[in-house]
Amino acid sequence: EGLQTLLPRGDPLTETFLEVQDHFGVSQIFPNTIVVLPPNPGDVTSRGWLNASCHAMKFMASNVTEVMRAHGREAGDASLQNFAMKASDFSGLMIQGGICTSLLISLLENPLAKKYGDFLVNGFSNEDRTATKVRVKTTLDPFSTVGQKW
Figure (cartoon, rainbow, N blue to C red):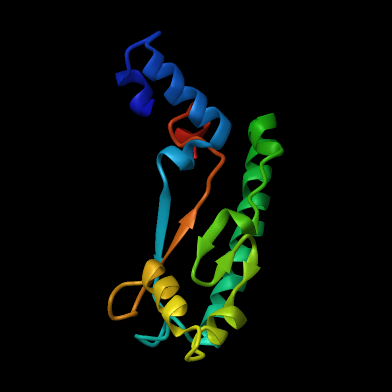
């Protein structure tokens, strides 16, 4: 059952930890990050690739929602039947708040905005810009009984 079994029962620290996890979701305590590689090394700022990968994230969110709901119906689990993953659950160079950022990133290559653009790109990619990371917010607790089954 994850970290919870290691925490002292009734301790204020334990209660605070559980409260934060309940209010903000388990992924705020245990973040999930995926690494995405463009087909051509160094293309993490390519407008076409950013747009395509953003739409792939949106498709994944929709697909996860459908699969989880179907699994919930089969298992008779109401929490999974109502499960919904949103595009805004992804946060990366190509997507923020469920919105594709390819146009914004391409505008940051303007000499006046380059410093901010480099800061943003460097925050989400490796030094040689051959890979980028995407943070994934999950509402399904991977340490719960249902999460362990999934």
